[in-house]
Length: 551
Image (cartoon, helix red, strand yellow):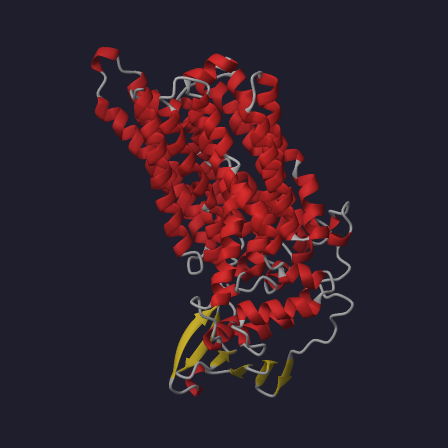
């Protein structure tokens, strides 16, 4: 959708040559045999492939390192969320915490304390979208970080259960503002050829928070006072303090600048960070043409109350469907069991100290899986990863559930520790596979699918969906584990199979395309089929790209 001031489209056709920019010209032929001395291959976006081939962007320049610093600050926003996910699992098992608040290890009391965080996560996004749209992505990160510091102060100083719950609500509220703005910032500032790895790295901040939280709680577990749980809660504010200091000095998203009429600043950003200072770099030329065609100056992002752009057209509804699918499946594939890791380990024979150690080790092995997923994010098709990754998750959970059932049904005097170890092995493997398939894509896929003018509000919608599903996980999870125990795991086995089928039927492929080009996919008659289509190209030794239209 073009804005009113973006009608000076530069893309033209000259005979058999498509001129996109000064240094980006595509030749078109009808027969690959006419092309000599070239490597014939297939791609999803010929112009993008040509631009990347000719781009001089290097990851080893000063400006690239500034861009990496921007990504690290956004990474810290994700750390705040991951820290809490691992933190409460361990704190809930601490005796001084239990004596202070008498919540119980499982059941309704634990469910309320865990789930109030997700209630805050459902309320917060309604403020997050307008903040990020009106004042910029950096402002959203700054605001969320301030809220987390306040929430950490409230919860760490708690002496009564009500204050603890209020702190949990404020933390969830503030994290949702962070996780609306930060992934939007990531995907909008990174060069398109690095988008998968850089934005995927953002969500690995979950482990950047969960691993320190597991280690800190392990180290504090032997403190014989309330400081055993207060210290980890205080340290929850550390990543947000860095964000507060750094965010005002970061460059703003070029897409947000463009959408707010600050074209010269947007072009300057692209030239500096995507073109190594060359305004005629092919990637910069391609992005600039697509910016002017695709970013509106009068979109719904200028109206804080207007969410209609998420659903008003067929393309918008397809985009929103992808966001909702990831919001639901990314939280309800069995990963919600991670809030109760210690109880899952304890249920198959591990003692109090061992469950803390396993909780820490699980964070490292899961982070390893996520790291592999990030490294391959710019190459692996999203659809295949989600379809097969979710299916393998079902198999791993089935193994864990079956062995947990065998342990539970074996008389105490006949229990075999090898069964418990095998159950934990399958649970670890589930977390590794889940982290490989979902962790990089939980932030990357929704922000890719959303249009620039509706990205912040779309991510706010995503946060609401995530919060709602997380509420089910954190409130119903401990009640279910208390009442039906290991049988709760089998619910996710069946559901993961359903998820895998739905990804196959509905998942839209986004890899290998610029953000703006995805509009062509979502406006097509069948977005799923169109997204899987490939174009034949021939690449000469000098980097010139020739499009073979007849194949």
